[in-house]
Structure formats: C-alpha cells, structure tokens
Length: 479
Image (cartoon, rainbow, N blue to C red; front, side):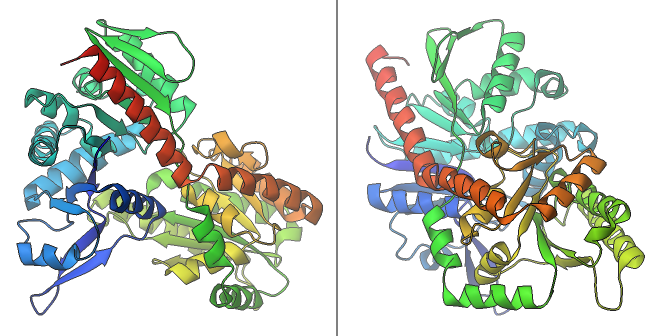
C-alpha cells in the first residue's frame, strides 16, 4: 500500500473565528486521533473532513492549522443548512438514537436523508480528487455510510474500507429506518466493513440476510464474507483501544499524582465513585443517579462513606432534546443532595464542563470505583482509560453489559443492566465492600487486556485486513 487516506466527519482539529477576525485552531487530543495522525505522518497521506465551522473557510486559516502536521489536510465545506440537516439532523437525530436502540428519540424527517446523501457525495468528490492508485482509503463512522455508494457512482474502483464506531442495531430496530435497504446496500459498496464487537457484526449479518435477497453470507471463521454479484465484501469485529502507554505515563506524573491526592483529601473517609460522560441520553446518566439514590435509601452503610463525582461534558447543545436531558440530570442531582446531604457530606458532586488532561487523569487515578453504565455504547473508552490510570490497582469497574467494552472486560468488571436500578444499587454496595486483594486481581487482569489490545493493535489489525482485502480485489480484478 502507498498512502493512507483517512475520511471522517471532522478533521483532527476545529477552526473557530475569534473576535478580532482571526481563526483559532483547536486541536483534538483524543487517543484515536493521535494514533491515526502518527500513522499518517509515518506513511504519508491525507485527512479529509469538516473543519467544524459552517461556510467556506479561507485557505490562510488552513495554512496555520496544518503547519507541520506531516500530512495533507482536505477540508469539506458545509453550509449552515447542511450542517443542521446532515449533522444535527440525519446523523444525530436519526442514526445515532436508532443505532443505540433509542428509536423514540428519532426524528425521521425526509429532508434529512436527502441532505445526508448530498453531503456524502461531496465527501466522495473530495476523496476522488485526492486519492491515487494504491491508496488505502479508510472511511469512519455513521456520518459517512453512503460515501462508498457515491464513490462507485463516480467510477472509483479502488478498495474502500469503513469502520463503524457506534453499535449496529438488531434487525427489528434497524428496519424502523425508512431508508433501511438503501443504506444497507450503500454499506455493501465498501470492500471491508469493521465493527466494534461480535454483537454488532451478528446484527449486521442478520440484516443482510433478511433484507438483501441478492447477497449471500458465506460460512467461515475469522473475517466473514458476503457475496454480492461478482463482489466479495469482508466484515469483521475490531474493538477500538486506547493509547495505554500515554494514559499510564500521564497518570504517573507528579502533577497528576498531586491533583489526585488533593481530590481524595477533599473527601476524607469516603470512597470516590466516578461518572464521566458526554451529555447524551445513551450514556445512562439518569439511571445511574436513580441507582445511587436507591443504594443510599436501602444501604445505610453507604451514607457518608461514598461520593459520586459526576462529570458531564457539554455536547450537541443545539439539539432541544439535549437541553431537556440536562434539565432532567440537574433535577435528579438536586433531589439526591436534598434528601441525603448533611453538614459534612454531599453525596453527588456534579460538574457540567470538560476536564483538562491533567484533571481527567487525576480523576481516574483518585476514584476507587468507576461507574460506566451506558444504555448502549459502541465501545466506551472511559472504562479502558480508568483501568490504564489505576496504577495502584485498587479500583473497581462497574460496567454496563451493553457497552462494547464488556465483551473484552466481562471477566473482571462488575457487569450491570443499566435499566435495573436495584441491581445497580446492589453492585455499588458490592464494589464498596470489595477487599483489596480481589480488587487488585481483577484490575490487574483488566489492565493487561487494555494494554495488549490498545489503539495501535486495533489500527494494525484493521490495516492488515484492509491490505489483504485490497490484494484479493486486485487479483480478482473486480471493477
């Protein structure tokens, strides 16, 4: 393979206009972006995506943003109307809730689909302009599921690969999508499809079997094969990891260690429970708060002995449902603190803001219990980040059985059903009571899994599968 072409909804940075008319560059700092950028710099390549601001962005702004990154950056411009109907509309008011089994939150506005296709076609045009023979084209996530269809319509014959970072829903949920067959057929224009878990892979294959009469799912181990006409599409599960080494090293710094000590000192004689989530109804935050309230009602030994630090990172505030959701969280926090607080103890410390890197690592290191309870999640990297930062191994991970991470960590995490409030409350008590020996044994094993199946292992496994797919395509001379 030659260059790597990464295609995602967003570029690895955002541009924002400042008050003085200049452009401010806000780089992304996630482990996934960091890992991909490192591979792009090493191999050479292109990153195609939206810069995060509606309208055309002057070329001078990109000169500043891309200075020294080591790869080409190609912006895809969106108007305000396209942003609203493609991103906030179809992507996040149709696909996001539906794929998280929350169809009651969907807004199946027909115009959203048309704009979704239009924007995917614009991405396809950018890919077609900038790709070369032999490039490895890797498209990411639910915003761009129509991109391969648009590329094939433009005569692009290169091998195309795709990775879905969110869950893929079961058949009975997926078929509520008005464009179910059109979207499925568009996905099958890719040559390699990657999913987070075996569960997502099974759901996808079930949909293909039941909705695509001209497609055959072939039996086999490892990567699954789907035959569609003269083409073969490979599909598999590739669980995303984190940069374990970076988190472990950061958590071991003296600055983070001191912040963690300060955090623990602020809550003497209490075990700290961490909830850390983006503002989203799929994360199970109200259910978690109700479980804590239930635990405090039924288990008096927890009163004055545990503190939940709930950090909610603002997200998608432009969507009205998210405003309503935040108000619901605010009320629940107020109710719990009103019912149980004393002169010296507040059960929930609620922070509606982002944490800087050092604070984030300090929270992971200081909190003995991580409460990671999404209603549905593709993976959930918070669970893995907590394990990486648990240097003393005196930590407990309470994890939703519906998080993708449960597939890798189910042996040693305490799995819960986030819809079962009393079960979650009882598991909080079990975590609180767990002795040091058991905590250490469980955490040590989880850290081993997260260390070995890290973000670089994930990228290597996907790129290897993609290289094999491209080689097979060349040998068979598929058009």
